[in-house]
Image (cartoon, rainbow, N blue to C red; front, side):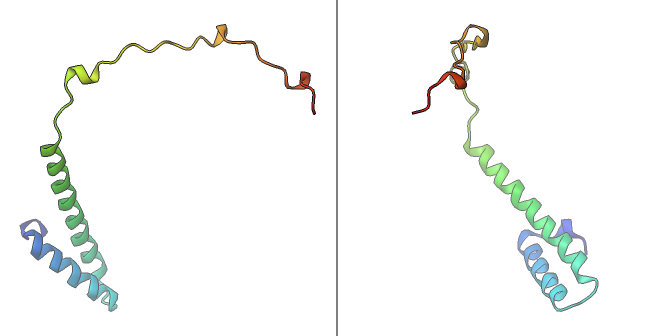
Length: 89
């Protein structure tokens, strides 16, 4: 069976049939079921990726530019409070 020549419906049907054969205990059916299911998932991922690419536009340059962030000067921060100096109430 040449998996890449099957259309999506034939592929899904074959994957289901081979999985059922594997569940019934046929020795060599598990490997074929796995290959067919993997191809079903691969094609589904490609379809989803194409849909996302068609619906999303690239962000404009104005949207991506941000004001520079101020760096945290950890050496110029407040002095630390020593926990042992606090009184316990």
